[in-house]
Length: 112
Length: 115
Image 1 (tube, chains in turn cyan, orange):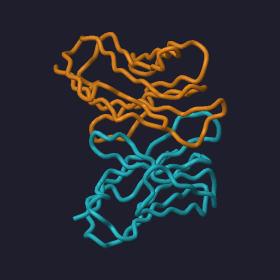
Image 2: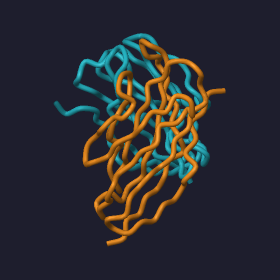
Image 3: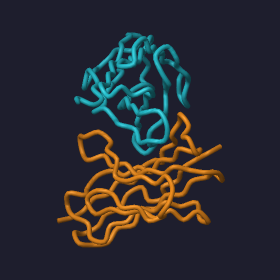
């Protein structure tokens, strides 16, 4: 299994541009998550999904959108990039029930 | 609001020193507790987890953690650290007997081990 994969690894955006961060998992996990990690702030949940077609907001959803058309994929969309969205973004997945999350390698995004 | 506190933001130790990283959470019900580690340039990996049973749990690479319900704590320990333990450590909580969707992470503790 490849586990959780994320693309791209790095990206620089100009203010106002849009982009989609890709996340895929091949473990048939129901739950998927998007976090952002800022220095000294830990991980903040942006959006999560409990299955295909079902998504919900986390702590910091403003400026982002998600979709979950398949079990495997959970892309995160930034519509109008702002400097405040400069961060490292992690995707994670887990099985149904009580279990740990499996994380992807992250995407480092800079908005200038 | 539920929260997870990691009071040590930066820790510097020499090799062979003992380690204890604090983690406190604010939730009175059933909790599931995790410690994750992030080595430089890598993604988060699970170190250990507690769901129920023996409050002293052992994880990978010689780490252990003790769940003390009365203190709302889940401190991470290692008797003798190595240079390769240099990393950032995150405590996380998920509550409920069947698990809820959301996890709450602490702000992390950055550990540097001097050779």
